Image (cartoon, rainbow, N blue to C red; front, side, top):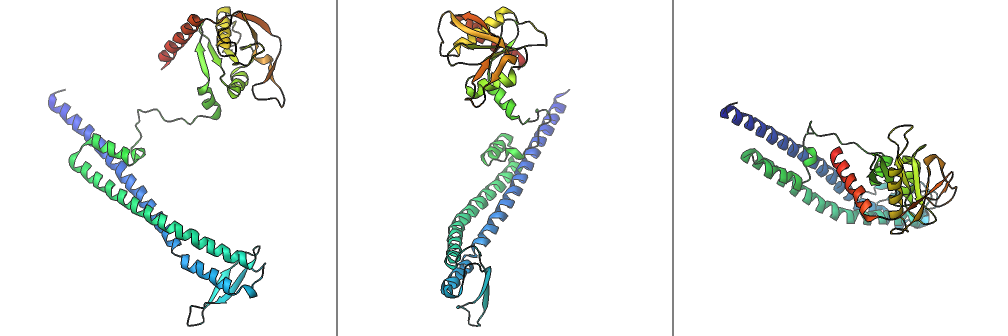
Length: 315
C-alpha cells in the first residue's frame, strides 16, 4: 500500500472517530434537554405554593365548621372581591387542624424545593451551553484526544457507540460475584484449591464450590478457613501432594498459623453438613481423616508463585 492510500485510510479512521464523538456529544445534549424539561416542571409545581398556603389559611379561618371525616369542603376565598368559592380536598383520617398543618407543611417544602430546583436549572443550563461549545470546537479542530477528555469531564462517554471488538459486559449473578472474592490456589498436580476468608466465604466454599467427592479440609478445634480441592473430572483421585498443599493452606489461614505438626481434618464435601440455627460457617463433619501439617513459608511461596503464573497464562 502506497503512502497516499495509507494517509487516506488514516483520514477515514479519524473522521469515524470524530463522527462517533460528535454523536456522543449530541446524545449528551439530548439527555441534558430532558433534564432541563424535568427541572422546569418541578419549578412550575413549586410555584403553586401560594395556592397551597391559601388553602391552609382558609381551613384555619374555618376550623369551627370543619370536622374530622370530611373528604372535601367548599370555602369562600376571602381575598376575592367576587365571592369566589374554593374547593379543598381533605384527608378524612385527619382532624381539621392536622389538615391545615399538612397544607402549610407542603407549602414550606415547596418553598425550599423552589430555590434548590432553580439553582439546579442554572447549573444544568450552564453545562448544556459548555457542551454545545465543545461540540463546535470538535467539529472545527478535529482534536480527538481533547474531545475525549471533555466527554469524560461531562460524563458523556457512556453515549459513545459500543466497540464491536470489545467483549460485552456480563452482569454477574450473586454466586459469581462471591466466587470472585474467594482465594484460590493452583496445586502442584493441576487442581484448584479454594480457601474461605470469612464465615460467609467458608459457607460458600463448603456448599457452593464443594460438591460430592471434592476433598474438604479444616484445621481441628480452632477457627480457620474451609478449604476445598475441586476435582478436574468425576472419579479423579487427588494425589497426596495436592492434599498436603491444601492442608498447608488450611493451616496458614487459621488461628494455628505458623504451628508445627498441627492436626488438619480431611473428608469429602458430601460429608460436611450445616448445623441448623448455628452461626454461619459452623458445620458438622463426618467420615474424617487426620493429616499432620507444619507451616512452611517456602512451600507457601511456591504455591503462590505457581498460582500467579497459571492466572497469567489464563488471561
